[in-house]
Amino acid sequence: MKNILFICSQNKLRSPTAETIFSDKEGFDVLSAGLNNDAEIPLTKELVEWAETIFVMEKSQKNKLQKKFRKSLNKQRVICLDIPDDYEYMQPELVTIFNSKLDNFFKIK
Image (cartoon, rainbow, N blue to C red; front, side, top):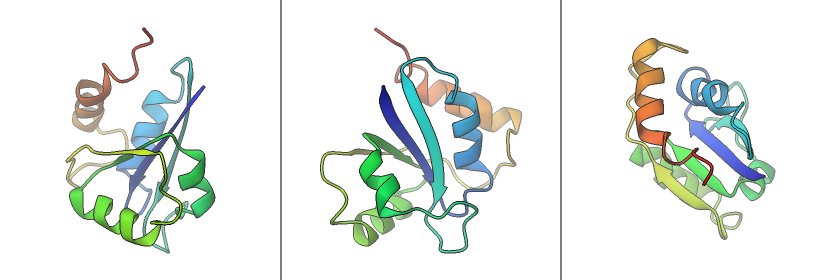
């Protein structure tokens, strides 16, 4: 089982959408969290340490993640998806973007 974590700022729109889309993929355990302290599910060091791969939505979030959780980031792969905060939860355009950017990643080989 591969542990995948999706992160955005508030954990209200983008990262929960990604978690919903990919949570049923066989061989993957998927969670989401937000970098802001007032996020729906705030990011913790335990979540960072749990993850094998972390997807952030924006470059600024990658920088904040690396600064805030430097000691917990050891072997995790951190990938920026470059998805702006312009979408609602499960908006069809956002679902399409996630599917096109992550289709190959979630294919079992």
